[in-house]
Every structure is written in C-alpha cells, then in structure tokens.
Image 1 (spheres, one colour):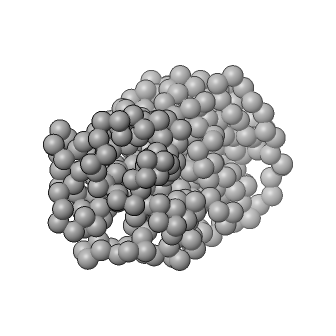
Image 2: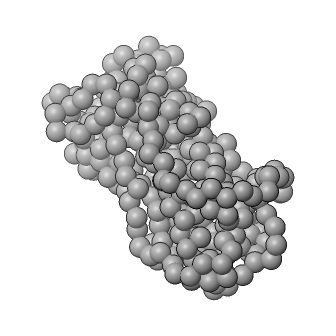
Image 3: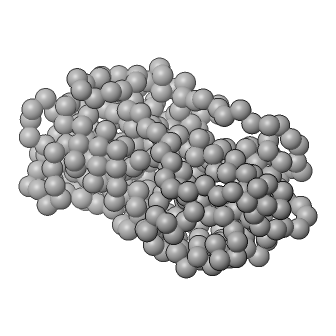
Length: 339
C-alpha cells in the first residue's frame, strides 16, 4: 500500500489502559487548547478494538501522530453498534482536552449530540470510514465511497453469473449504519435489483461479526439452498457466511463477494472462498485525518466535505466491464498484514 510521507518526530511510549465500556491507547502529555494552539492532541474513537480493519486504522493513526509530533489517544466501543460506549468515549476525550476527534460512528445518528457538544467546545471532529447523518454533523469525512464499493461488488457478481437470474442471500452489518445502508444499496444497483425483489431469497444482519454471520447464514439455509450468490458487507461476515455454506457443501455453487481488502480477505479470494473483495484504504483515512488535525492545531484551518479515499475490486477471475486488480496486487497493497 502506498504510504504518505510523514515527518518523523519522537514521542513518549504508548501506555495501554482500559476503562469501562472502551479501550484506550495514549501517547499523552501537557495541557490542551483547541485550533491554532500549535500542539495537536488527537482522539480516535472506533467501533470496536477487535475488528482487524479498525485495528489497522488505529495503528495507522497512532503512527501518523507519532511521526507528526501529535499527542494521541484511542478509544473504542465494546462491539459494533455500541453507541453508548462511543458517547462515553467522546466525553472522555473532551475531558482529556483533545483538540481533534476522529470517529468511526457505529450509528450514523447515535452519537450526534456528543459530536455537537465537542464541536461547540471548539474541537475539530472528522468522521473516518463511516459518514454521519446528516453529513455536516461533523466538519469533514474521510472515507470510502461505500455506495460505489457496494456497486463494484454487485457489478462483479452480476457479471460472474453470466446471465443467470440471481438467487441471492444478503449478509448485512449493523442496521442504521450509513456504511451498511450505502454498501447494501450500491450492491443492489450493481447487480440490478431492488429491495424486496423475488431474487433476494433471504437477509440477515450480523453486526460485522463472523460468528453472527455464520449463525445467520445457517438459519437462512434452513429455508432454501437453491442459491447462486451471496452478498456480504465485510470480510469477517464473509468468512462466517462461507463457513456455513461449506458445512452444507454449497460453497462451490455460489459466487460470494465481500468488501474490506484486508490481507486475510485477499487471501480468501486467492484461495477461492470469495470470488471478489473490494479493497478500501484505512491507512489513508487515518493518515489524512491526523494530518488535518495537525493543520488545525497549527493554523485553526478546518477541512470540510467528503474526501473519497478510494476502493478497488480484487479478484483472480476478472469480468468484462468490471475494473479489478489480481490478488498479487492485492497482497502488496492490503492492510492488516504487518506492512
């Protein structure tokens, strides 16, 4: 993966501690002011601290903060959908005196009051990966165009079916999340269906969790096994769905797609578990978020609007009309592989 050039400055070693309802990582010291004070104090709030995607985002933000002389503190909800945990994390960071909060909101609307309180206190708030609703509830969003990523997956699956009518199961994430809504809608556009279409044989929400996805898929397979395609909102859920399909001996007959682009997910494509995954770039989101925080601390200048950090379909079986890269490229550019 391409790495942004970062100015190397040393900071104190990280101290990992835990608090009720969230996980914290700190590189900390001194007092804090808001924009224009010169010293960036960055707080990151992710959905969980266990999903490899958010671990990568946190690690990239931590490294960027160290390299740019910024203090850094990272907190997370206990699970995907833990809005109360994220609200507590924002309140915690405000008490610590940060001047920028980077957040991947579990719900697009569930943390809006806490975000408003932070912005009213002069704190720059940037959404990473997941947009709020409305989008201008934060100062800026650095994220994948999740509708486009879903559309890429859908277009690939449609092409892979080679004219056959879809017989589709859908494994979604957390209801109410903008990422879930956008990827779901994009996939349906790409495959040429609408919600409620008879080609959609079943649907489950698994909150981004592999075990819940496996359980949900097992339940769906009790209803029908006359299927040819599976949509999954992210790779952990894709692995869970695949495990259920394999246990029933159905994996060979289905085209399974996913989104994330972690190194494990790219390997899943290489091994034939997924036909395609759509890679996104959490390092870029995190690095750009930290650089914006540093700029805000120095000058008071805030970013605004939506910044698309890109997505790329990864497959070893390219389809006409669907731009993609192979798994060799994917393994060179994936995240979560110690790069």
